[in-house]
Amino acid sequence: MGKSSKEDLREEVNERFFKRKQSKRHIIRELGVSWNFVIAWTKSPDQDFSIDKRGWPEGKSRFHPTDVRDRIVAIRQELVDDPNEFYVGDLAIQQRYEELYPNDPIPGVDYINKILREANLSNPHKKKRRGVAKYLCYPAMCIERLGERIADIDFVGQKYLSGHSKPLHFLSVAYRKPPRLRSITRTEGETTAEAIEVTERTFNELGWPDVGRIDNGFPFAGGSGYAGRAVRYISRYAAYLISNEVIPVFGAPRHSWHQSTGEGTNSVFGRNFWDQQKFKTMAEVDERLAAFNRCSKKYAKWKPWIREKKGASFIPRVCFIRKVEEDAQGKNGQISITGQSIILPVAHTGLFVFTEWHLREGLLKIYFEREAEIQQIEAIKFPINPRSRKRCSHFII
Image (cartoon, rainbow, N blue to C red; front, side, top):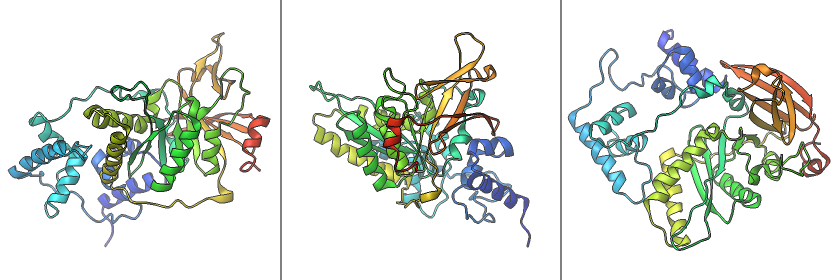
C-alpha cells in the first residue's frame, strides 16, 4: 500500500529538519504547517510516518471531558505548592498530566494555556518584537549548519545574599535543541578559569555539544579587541572549546537576544529560583541549586549521550555574528573581528553577517543570509597572531 499525502508531508518535515538542517520556523513558513505538526514530526530521524499523532478521530473536533479542566488546574496548583518544582508552565503541566493519567489522551499545550487563562492562572507575557531577526537577516541557518547540538553558555549575573557585600556568581548552560536542558552552577567569580572549569564539569556530565554560543565578555573573549591587545587573537576560552571539538560562536555585541535560550535560562533562574526565596547562606543556595538542576533534567526528559569525536575531520574555526555598521565617511559598511576592522559593501549596513575564521588556512569567510539562502560575500586572509598561534598549535597543525 502506497504512502498517503499526509505521510509524505510528515516525512518531508522530518527530512527538512534532520537532513537539511532547516529551522522549525523556516519549515512552518515554507510548508504552511502548524507549530504542533512540526513538533510532532521532528522527534527523531526514524519516526513512523504512518501513525496519526492527533489522538482523536480524523475530521472530528477534539473534545475534552469536563474533568480534564479540573485536572489541569489541580496540577498547576500542585506544581506551585511543591518546593522542589521550579517549572509550572504548560509543558510542566502536560508532563505531570501524562504521569498521573498514562492511559488518557494528553491535552495539548494550547488547550492547557486556554484553561489557565480562563482560571486566571496564566502569567502575563511581555510583548516580543517579532520578526526582528528575519528583518535584520539574522544568520540562524549559518549557526544551525555547524552542528546538531548547540549550547548557550553565559554568566547569569551577580546575586547577593542578605547581609553580605560579596556577590555570588553563576554560569548557565542551555541546550537549544531537544532535550532543551538548563543547568546552573555557582562559580567563585566571572573569570576564564572558572568558566572553563564549570564548562568541563557540566559537559562531562550532560554531554558535549557541537557548538558553543558565547558573548563578548572578558571571560569568554579575553582581551580580544581591547586596547593594547594584538588583533587576530584567539581567547583562552575559545581555544579550550576548539580543543574539545566545540565550535565557538561569539554573538553580536549589544544584541543579547541572539542567545535566546541562554537569556531564557537566566530569566527562569531569576524568576523561578532566586526571586522565590530568601537565602541566608551559600550552603542553602547550593542545596536548592542542586534541586533546580534535578528538576530541569526531569522537565527536559534528559538522557545522557556520548558525542563521537571527529578527530582529523574536525575543522578548527571561530565564528562571529556581527551587525554591519556604517564607516565614518558613510561610504562603506564595516565590522570588527578581534580588534581588526573589515570593510563590507554599504548595502549590508544595519544587517547581520556571519563570519567563519578558519584557523588552519588563516582565512576569514563572511556570509550573508536572507530567506534561508546563504551567500558568501567576502573572503580575506586572516592569519593568527604569533601569540595565539602558540596557544593553538596543537589543533592548527
